[in-house]
Length: 456
Ligand SMILES: [Zn+2]
Image (cartoon, rainbow, N blue to C red):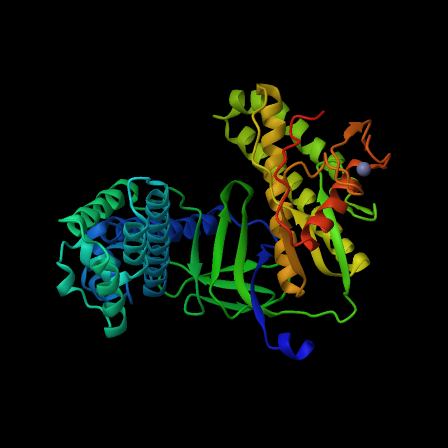
């Protein structure tokens, strides 16, 4: 019901664009902020990205105080708002890196056949309990970890199940070893943007004023729309094109359409973007746009290599690439919206993404371009579903185009059609796959265990 979703919000990234070309001088000032911003981030990565700094990351005040005391800000001459935005931006990256490290270790634990189930439980507990995890990395004995009463009891329980002599110390040193193996300090090479907040920018006059390193001097960037966002914005610079893009993460209300009641199976493709279980096609021209982009990319490989040292060559390449990409993306978004409006889905059933397959050298360029679009289409569909309270269910995709959606038997493909030798069913390949997606999504039984991969 609408009442359930009325107050729900969702995070969404919106973009704003510079309306007229930025002068070289203004761009230089913006790039100077971006360069300092990167320097601060790399400093924070270097100083707090390592294993020994883990305990300083939460809640972050220690880092903030130490960074203030470092005198680094004055040395750079960077306005303090930018400085602290860079510090917290970098801390966010360090925390994400810790999440990745822990998940790699967790995976290694799961795959290690030398551990008993109790040992795995114990290790997983350590990975998800911050204070225990920190204690181990700092070589503290378990008695010295700062665990809340209830967690302490749980720990004692798990440790009590490990009876082998010296096993606990063995597991702790395993954990330390794996963390050292997987943990890396983040590093940033790009100096093409920075976060800005209301302390460093102000909207007005159909554009935005941005604080620079020179005292009281602001740069004005005219914008193509007059929206004003209260959140932090990321200012992304495109110096070769004299452009800037502002990215804001905003909270928008989740929409709910009472008339969206349908159960829709879909299949995605690279020539026709999306086919429903009823055979409706959206994004028929995707292949056309995609080919244009791929042909151009392939053509550029040689040219770009030859011209990569010339400034105009590189400029033209980047500008054209961006234009083609934007054209493709706006087409994809338009067609996804069209699909949702027409089909009014309550639930969408989509085959999971199959793993990438190898291909030849020439195909590879084509393939990587389409691979990348495939990710984009899925990402956008997921986001639009979240925004409009539509349930998206990803179904088991193995052999989804080879199985007959009417009787379940393996079939074969003939000139874009699916044919079932068992029951005589004929349908467009994509429509058949979309029907299977719907069927598999609604069917609660486990996937078939007989493989029909080898059928042609
Ligand atoms: Zn059949």
